[in-house]
Image (cartoon, rainbow, N blue to C red; front, side, top):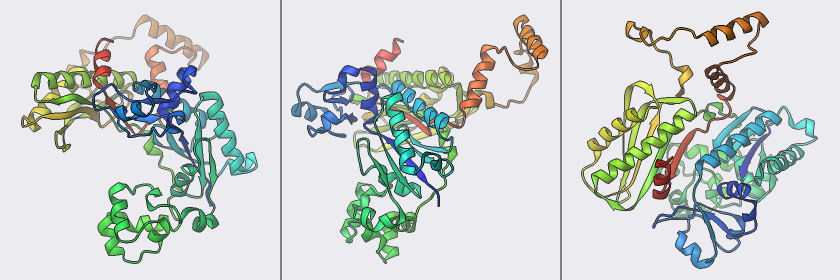
Length: 419
């Protein structure tokens, strides 16, 4: 039987800001935008004690506590802490991790927990190390599959550790509300409640599978198995690789101004280009997405001929896609992104006569480095490009988050445009 951890950062966005500004530790703090429609993205535990939580409208939160500290989103900061978290786990414990989101991951500790005396002692060591070195409070769930480990990490917050064994399922797990099973959202919960399924135990004992499939779809039997204590214990390491980069922004007021919309698309494309170039990655699919005043989302994408992270390529394709879909109705939200992500070092291009003209002869510095390395029979000197390539190879399996989707507010867009 495997031993699986689910480590979940507590109030992650707020915690990142608190680490960056230690004076904010004891004061009620929320992460939000400056938009007229702003909601609380994350509240620290001092704010939660006052009844402030996500996704409460910001104006309501300020009514509860007028002196509330509000900080803007800083996704660069969050990704920096996420990378540090996953690096810490890989370097100090094991590289058998599955990144589930920017602030949580599954860890297979089957082969290492005995060194610490018990799985609980390993979890305690990991929890304290993350808190001590990164300043991030966290909760850890321990079980024999991913489903139960995730439920366990949510049972004690903040700074909790919960162990679920097979014999604990009837008394500890099955009395919980059915929406504690990952993947059962608000609408599904309401429909399940309507047929008498209120707890995980109710779902485990429900016999009308055809009816259940009308509510939960093809995954109905999987949910039943998980309600009985089953679940997958195999980690998906491919989840650690970035699949897309996207930016979205909500308009302060619903807009039909094409010039204003084009400006937003340009700024969003610029963000994507900068982030992709910083990560040394490229994509060959560009997409544009928007919501109208009825909150209906429209998305269109196009595969382009080459992999790119160039602003002009992204922007020109996004504008063309938008014009193909938009019918002139007021827009509430606009987004742009690239998919088909790979490292630029993974591009395999066929050499043509046209491309030969772009080849540069080896420089004197490169020749010298090659001779020195040949003499010592190892790479003791590296060019900047070679160093970046080596960094990519070392980080490929552990540092990327599956989806890097950012929600930007108007203030963030304007300030970034001046960078």
